[in-house]
Image 1: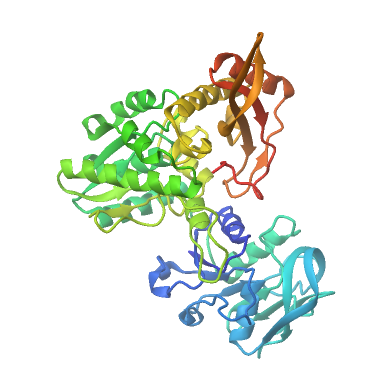
Image 2 (image 1 turned 90 degrees about the vertical axis):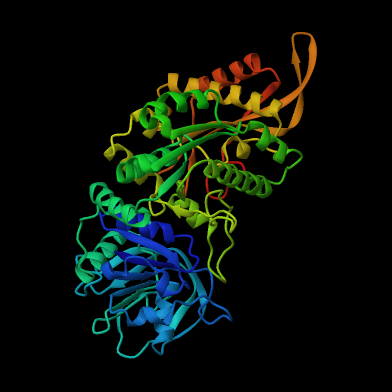
Length: 509
């Protein structure tokens, strides 16, 4: 395992992506988390310290547990991470007169371990306002730029390396090679992490965690919960009880589809719960996005708690939490604020006497799909576009009402149908409809209308951490707009969202 300590950099998840692309396992933890809470230290091969928006000399700047310096594993510091290494060993960091953001020409020592196989001049991505002004003892300079005399340093005896630039960013030419050099030539990692090996390891871990207990699964029918459920079923068989909660926030026809597909797979161990009225009642009058998410999350827990009391021997709750959920919801002390809370991140209320099982929490979305294929889950489930845990609640802006949900479901179904007909469904990361909390004037026939606005959203992404809006053909947009306005009672205007993530998010709430 390669351990990545996150100090708040916008690029941290990219470090993980680059490592996993090499079939090497890695995990991200908040940079200031106590070392005793890290998993897999017995298999530790190397440590990477991420960048940060902060300055190492600032009061309250995030720092790692001091015990990491004594683990004996090779350490690579990136930007802020390099500055942490320097400060820890007697170097000094100060504000730079000329900040460095963007591509920079860097002179590197091709003969050193980190830059083996590179050119003497490389184009690399810089993003910093501070720089190293005094070298730590026994370190050697291995790279320079016009603005950074210590663009990279090394101490082979201590197995410590630091770079001021960001090799994980795709703009860094040969940045991938630098990461490869660290994880393979310096850390001695092997390309032995595959979905097959992940299944073997995870099944063993699940069996050790669960024992003879039973697990309650929050099955939604989406990719994440489906893969998590099949993974648990493979590990513990009939000890898994699946509960599907019909909260009324699903896509059109979703409940019937879940009953058909999973009823065959889990038989009597699938319980269908009609809780539409409960959710709508608790969401009545609520317009704040975060409050809606929290209400939905808490209500989920309440429903599962109630169902678990009807069953005997339920000690665990299965959740399909994936890595982007954790990265967006968890921040370290002194680092950037969480982007948004996720309904399945943050633990359980004390009153609920169940422990969490999260077999996907260290996987990105594309890795979850790969795992699902390895588990032989039908393509109709695995190839589904991602669907948010809170369902259509995050696509129903303003107060959630049954009327607005029905309008949205019909509009969203039209979007999906037309995207499929155009042969684009599997080529697009997500495509869906959103209903706005405003009405606009329209004319249908000779009559004035005053009805809802529907937004169409289509984005492409690899792992949901970044996303680009899709340039759908005008003919397709026209067809979707025409159908929605003519077929969906309550909608008279359609617009198209052309925002990327960042700065926007994929969902509207």
